[in-house]
Image (cartoon, rainbow, N blue to C red; front, side):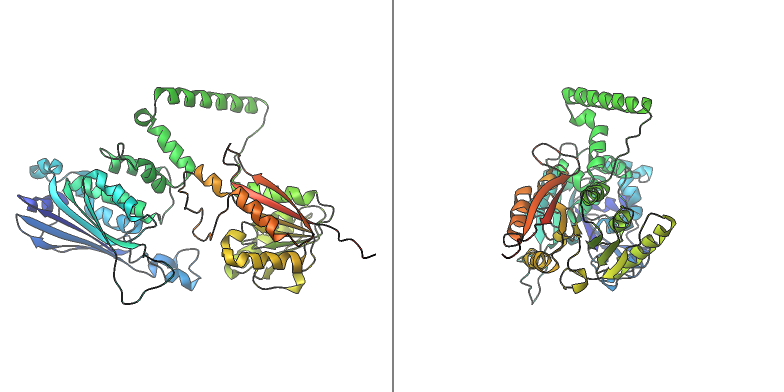
Length: 479
């Protein structure tokens, strides 16, 4: 992973003072476990080129992570691609240039626009070339995008997402580096650390003087902060420059109403905790189960770490819960969670079971309830019909409960139309698409269908999660 910064023209060599790096010495340091090197490949008064390279230890990248048990975690592109990880490594080495604080004799050159050429890569981005160009062109750069060539090709994709980007234009060294360190993670759309309000400061500091008027400002903010609540908080903190007075008044009135409601709740001695969407799904599923006349035997397919199974373990009338999960690591976590249920006298202990939707297991046939909570979107669409056919014709549960994301709601999260909520999702359906598929699955099976949403409803977009409840009808006896 590297960035090359090249300046040409009169006094181009001054960039060495702005970077605070002697052109006749090699900068070689260890930053956050990665080896960072900076070397001038060309240095004259009329031309200066410096290469900034970072080489992390691929083992250190993984060994302390919760998924380090899985060997596939060691096979990744993090040590090769120019990403947020790379930006973190080199930020310390570029502190003088980013802060615009060279030695006093050279302070006047901080605001001097040089004829610069910046090249970086490889960068893996899900953005099309036109959008990549649209991120940099408004900043005054001519953008060149190249892809690596190979003697072989894969037919899975027509074009590689990995690209090398070259930017040419007149810019100050400080602005150029700030723009790169903010926009490279936007391209990569990957953050290796927890995203918090500290990102606000980075957006304001590195975006000062150019982000406010950028035509893709919303995209940059969304892919930097990722989470709707953080985006909204940032927009509110920046509202003086970006929102009209009318909107500010509306926001103030809305907050006033919320304050009044909160005060009223406090007077009544009530609390209004905000429930996470995952918890709302669990509650919706359990509400369905509590109303069922038969709920003795439950199958939780794709049970993960056993969070839903553990909650159902205390529902009155349930006698057994099969927590079926293909991941051994998740099963270990589930076993630990189930062991804690022993302290509750009213709880049963779920049975962890290694299994998959792709392999039929006679033990799971004919149960009262089968649950697929946020599971089907992780299955390739062309395989899903076969899976559902096995469930309704072979397993034949009394009730089948399926939840999956509502794609229409992604717009509320300020996501692109083609963007999925999770990297492992193979698809996400609109409400009409989900209804159509559900009806198709039971065309020749004796099930009735009921659909509902889970989570906060927004007019025109529905609710973030959609839930289908299939109830098996009693087949008439042969006369």
